[in-house]
Structure formats: C-alpha cells, structure tokens
Length: 181
Image (cartoon, rainbow, N blue to C red; front, side):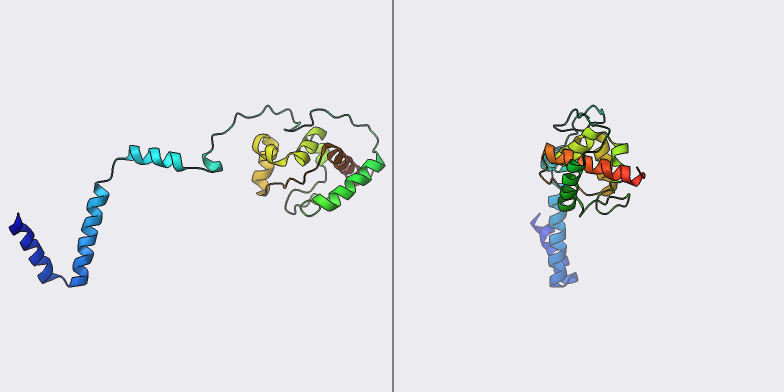
C-alpha cells in the first residue's frame, strides 16, 4: 500500500505542476465527500422543515362564498335613495385614503377602478374588503382573483364600519352618476 501511494504521489509530482496538483487533490476530496453524503430521504426531511413562505403553507379550507366576503359585515340594509351627507363623508375618506390607488372610473392605477363596483359586488363584500383587506385576499375567492390580477395587496387603511359605510354610499353615488341618474 505504501508503494502504491508513493507511485501515485510520484506520478502526480512528475506530470502536474504544483498548483494543478492541489486542484486535483481538492477535486478528488470534494468528490469523496459528496459521494459519502446520506440519501435523499434525510435531505428531504431537512428541506421540508426549512421551507417557509406563502408557497409552502398549507392551504386553508376555502370559505363558503356567499358573495359577502370575510369580515364583520354580514348584513346591511340600503335605501333606494342616496344619503348625500353620508356620500360626502365617503368622498372625503376616498380622497384621503383610496384615491392614490383607485380611480372613480374603470381605469386601473395600482388597484382596480371603482366604476361599477356596486353593481358587481354585494354591499357587504365592498365594506368587508375596505375594512379587512388582508383576510379577504387570503380567504375570499373574488378578492384572491383581484390580488392575482393586480399583483398588489390592498393596504389596510384602518377603516371602521362607519367609514366603510360612508365609502359604500359614495361608490353608489358614483355609479349612479356614471349612469346619468
């Protein structure tokens, strides 16, 4: 054995310059270490423990979609007539908290345009989306689709039910005015 190692050492020394010799030895050692690693089952167990983030989280059971969304508003009564004072409050809230991302037309800015939203969505859904945007985009099928389409999570503006109701009234007024009523 000592003879074999001596002859391999002599061959390497005679044939290869010093820097290449060290590279060959390092490559050989790396190959030996790599081949000695344990099997896939152990590596997969480690990887599965380390994986985190939205892509690896277990999906929650889908919420029953009644079109009202996820949040504190489960039922709301709307009169046929617009409450002008409430709509004015809603306009002020829209201008201060919503207009940077949403237009009153169908045009997209960051988020979708709001024109026609009161015809597309139930009033409860609109209010819940305004009050509770993070949970809505996690659990509500319609909000999930909007997030996938617009690629931006709606910011929670800390809007309470009273302010959400005012915003809803302003959106109703906006939709009626767009129809010429």
